[in-house]
Image (tube, one colour):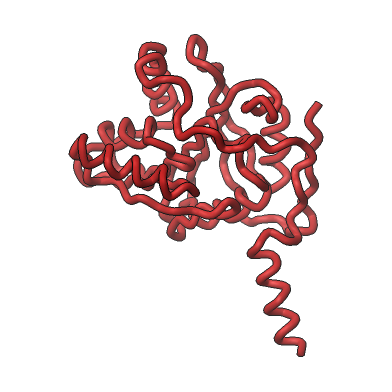
Length: 223
């Protein structure tokens, strides 16, 4: 009976039970795109984000919540042949749209990954930089997600989160809330920059070497 109870407990944690719920609204997923790519490129959004994150050949990158691949294709082009790029999303239909785009643009260095709401399902220690662009506020449980992201991050990895400074119910994340929720799972912010004239900001975090106990994670209030 003890073995059965232990198995049930582990299964509950894996399913998200035990992680605190965020004490703020979670935005629904409404589109695989944010704004239009020409506008974003005109404001040099991706160039500036990728420069700030140090995306150069040899760096392994995951585009989490990739949608139709705004960052995926730009990372793949920058890294060139031999790149390691993962494009993750929880919507199979978005990944199929991205697969078609990669075929049209003859990009063959991207691995598509169907994640789960609480787990990006990336290989262990496979990522040097994870990019979450305009997706954080849509993650059902950010504590569970960040907890399960950490094993995929290699030593020295960085997590870049692009979002807009507005309430989560309005498809943004206030920077103080993001910093608090990330810190609750042990992530430390090491850089922050406005992306103006592009929409939003880039916040960069380093993951914890050791994750906190799940029952020690405390949610944050949105002011």
